[in-house]
Length: 237
Image 1 (cartoon, rainbow, N blue to C red):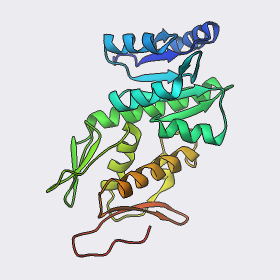
Image 2: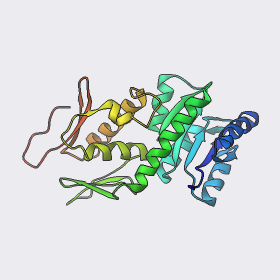
Image 3: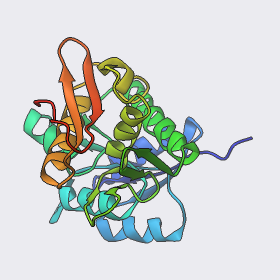
Image 4: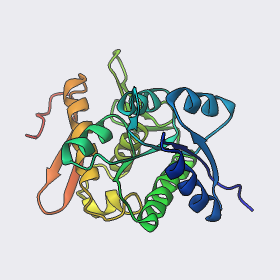
């Protein structure tokens, strides 16, 4: 039998943390608790972790800073769970590197669905080809970096951004439905999170010196990735 997924709950409300731990443990997960950023890092350093559930309100600590550090240094899945439910908070959390964002109070069934989606994505990442090539561009899915042959251009992505870009590369030149990008990743296929991630990828490509690799929105469908060869004109974005 496969080993249970290893989860860390980062929450400074002890009662809430233990209650959620009981629910997830009964579902078959291996759940550890951290009540601060330092305790989280200690648990991460002890062994591989599949998913972190992070509350942003950790007393004097800024949960967004913890999210950014996780996205920068770890491949662990990350779901932000917090009382901050505004659109600006959602966008900030996803841009900090979270795979998903869930506002309190939430339905445990919804949390389970989002957790399973992130865990599936992580497993697909393990099984994916380590490097995907499109034209002169190379996406390394292990270190989550996009490079281009012949120069030093380099863009780093979060785990979720890497997953989305890899999917587009494997469907180069094809309009990809938003539902296909989101299916299995989020609670609903039209979740705002997908568009936020795609916007972030596009901005990174445009601002990172990667001329020639273009993601265009396709009205009523989703997105399309094109690779422009030297001498060709780029499509308007």
